[in-house]
Picture 1 (cartoon, helix red, strand yellow):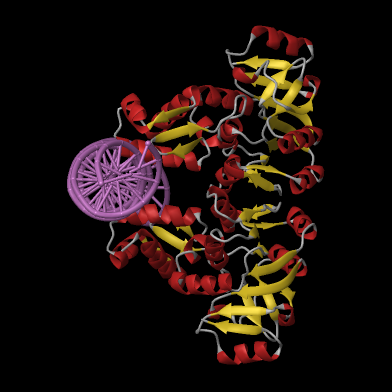
Picture 2 (cartoon, protein in one colour):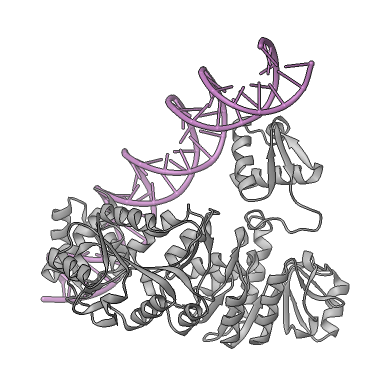
Length: 253
Length: 253
DNA sequence: GCTTTCGAACATGAGCCATGTTCGTTACGG
DNA sequence: CCGTAACGAACATGGCTCATGTTCGAAAGC
């Protein structure tokens, strides 16, 4: 079992029952108590849980998004496939706006090898595109990063978006439905997504099926703004048909 | 001998004589030819030299700056000490503009642990400040990074600078003299430095002594714009006195 | 004050990275 | 067109780092 797997197990156990003791977690994972303690410290630093004497307590409220460090290791396969398909929708030479989130980070990994211009809206993607001298051209937007998420937001980000026009905006999402449109967990994020869509000729949403039919609390815009949705087979069929009849092209991988 | 040491030796040998064979370099460093080939590939990717059959040729013109990857390992000690002194000049709570370059990267490492707001002008420093959740607040400027240097330049950078005002601008330099003022190797860089100084109440230059009395080709501004210079004992005494009589406070570490 | 938990320090082992060696392939010179 | 030298892919090896476990003294809670 890898380090990340164990972290996932612990986070799930703590979230499901609201808390757990070090002993319980050691039994559950088969690791020693010392290792569990170290894991709990790590997860506490990531904001996944709260350390208490004897164990840990959950910090996550229902409906809230789990932290980036955890999501990055979940459903990697589906994300890779969605990323590959999204990348295939993009032609050489395009200028691309790339949203924050784990799926978009996978897309950044692929775009690095393509002759395109990319402006990523997360620190992780900036780092990925900046450290290797590939054929891709990197443009950095201004902004203030939101904690571990690394998503750039605020007036500097909006100003950078306002100053440029893109061929394609690749957007990740927290919630999408034909009825409630595109939604985000964070108001600042929602503003950035809104401005992103406005600055691009075409909007592609890359999202695994679990987000479809779900509605987060910050409204971005109606589903009719979206040209294409790339998702996987876990997407609910009724949402897919509703989105398609609203004019969005849906690619199911 | 560490990897970086050997790279430094190879780069120096190639630069000094304009070129070298794999055999020569293997003898010089005591490494195998295969290792030398791998090193040459790495250095070629960094833009330090050009690979030719049987060896390598220099790419650097006289007076040009060696690439970032090499400078980062040179005179680390002096840079650390200059960085520490520069950091000491900054009060908690200040908002700081941090220039690109290896010395400023060391300063970023120290500022990470301080309750300050930092806007770094290089990708490396953004990454450093963004990955660890320290007390420092990170603000990212927009811009286009210049290759391996990671220095942000262009209209987006200038716009970000124009939108903000800072307590202190910490500037690295390529050349500084009382007569010719502050100079940079790159015109875009020079424009950013100029705008940086204009956006800050106070300008601190952090530079090892080798840059003093030296003049690069892109003019930034007169030495009278600088409030404080932090340098080391290798700084030429006559330049130091000339700068001091022009009104700059000089700290020699 | 007693018990349990905690975490610092050290031991250990697995995995990774740098290096070297071998050998078939490729490029240049005659 | 052939011979020689260089090249680089593939594998072997060894050092180093990182994760894990163990021990034990300290600290926290009952």
